[in-house]
Length: 109
Image (tube, rainbow, N blue to C red; front, top):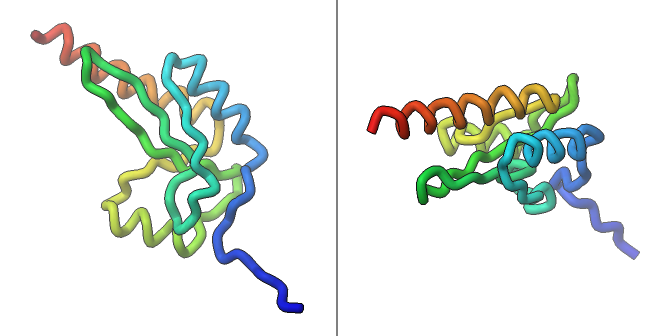
């Protein structure tokens, strides 16, 4: 009997729950897509600013985790569309930048 081996990393990183909690605490939505494979980031976070939906792709890595070949290819093909976050603080800082930018645009109008 043949053994089937997946070429995709489909396991959750140990810090995934902490990062998900940080996303929700920051007022953003969280969609877990870690099992999509083929280098696609682990999660999509989203928020609506004045009727405009914004999605951010996040690849979750441990403190020492490295991108797989497929993840590197995705980043290269999408001009680094996804962000790599290793801690809840990384996520909080990233989403705070989006919140600030959209708040500045709202005030400017």
